[in-house]
Every structure is written in structure tokens, then in C-alpha cells.
Image (cartoon, rainbow, N blue to C red; front, side, top):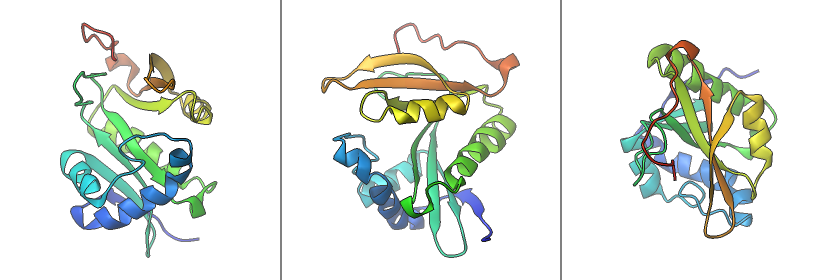
Length: 178
């Protein structure tokens, strides 16, 4: 069995990461999901690497899985006070081997909980266009705490996982998250 390494991605990884995400997100493009990660250019991947912290799981020859942490969501309306994970992808040829789960667990526990002392982590997904992800994240301890109907009829959900219960507080943003 190969040894796997987890590290923070650098700008030199951008082209390989773009190819990995393009391949991994092909099913989402087929479902007409138009999130930035689904059709990301190399330039957009570079911007993501510069503005956030991107982790990769690799073996001796290639990057196998990736996930990015944003601090916190920095969109037009902040949806949470906690870090947000996104751009989570694993090469389809490695599906079912638990490597994406290994990377997510590392980010949740070693990086967010143990290093940054983040009380919780959030993520977003589609409840209608690829509902199977809801069950996957629920099994990992995530719960839905906000929903948003998009213009195309999809139901976007924001999920969170409490990492340090004694430090966790409900998000109080003064407005709905969407």
C-alpha cells in the first residue's frame, strides 16, 4: 500500500488541482450545477490557493484529493462565523478507498479543531441536484442549519459540524444566512 502525505497546496499545484477537480466534478457539470469549483480555470484555482488554505492528499506520484478552508465565508453576506470547507474533490480512480474521508478528517480534527481551535466547521451542498451528499455529511456528524431555494429551483443547504462543543455558539449574524 502506498504512503500518503497531507500538505498545504502551493501555487505550483494549480494546474494539477484544476485537472483533478475538472475530472472529479464531471458528474456535477452533467447535473448542471454551476458552482465555481465545477468549472474552475487554472487562474481561479490559483486565486483560491492565494485567498484560502487548500490541503492535498498525495502519494509519491500524484495529488489524489483536495479540500479548501475559507475563514469564514467571505461572500457578499457572511453565512457563518466558522470556517467553511469547499472545493472538496477526489480523483474518481480513487473513489471508495476512503482517501477523501481521510483528508476531510485531517482538516476537521488536526487542522481546524486541534490547531486553530475552531469550535465548528461549515459547508454547503445541493439538496436536490445531488442529495446523496447530504447523507454522507450527516453520517460524518454534519447537520443542516440553513436552506436556500436558488433561481434554478435547486435547494442549497448549509451544514455545520461542531468540533469543540464547549466553545460552540450558534451563529448570530443579525440576518438569515442567505
